[in-house]
Image 1 (cartoon, rainbow, N blue to C red):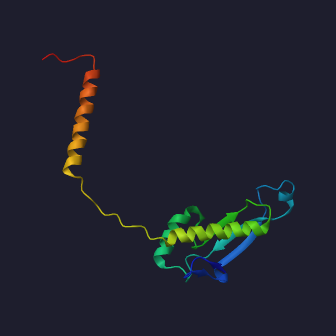
Image 2: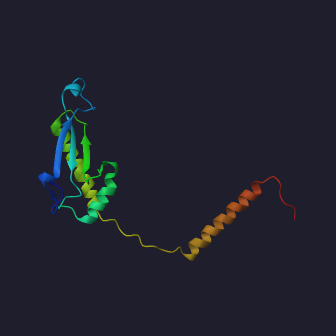
Image 3: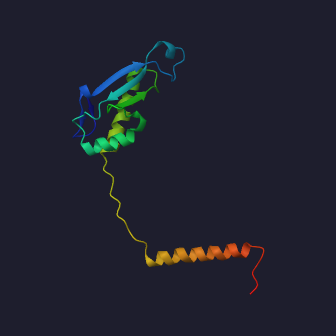
Length: 140
């Protein structure tokens, strides 16, 4: 079980972990011991997460989201299975916490009259500068 916050806890059946050979640090140990962790979380079927959080989680997970609605997190930074397991669980926890955060709705605002005037004045000043740069100055 992984505890995300006081309301959400991921159950054991939602998580599957497997160990594979790592490409990370470890020298000759890398070629002999399977220390990298592949953590699979059944996000689409999870009763723990609200639907809107699942949608945000799918977007955040990107290429880690599989066709059947699972998220695959890999960790191979450390030399031991235990530390890589902790790292994978922490990555998953951070991803879910990020998905639980409901973004603020953007309130459309109109530019003020003063800001419109400033913008137009800036454009005319810039035009004058560019006109002064030209070699053929028009004769009045």
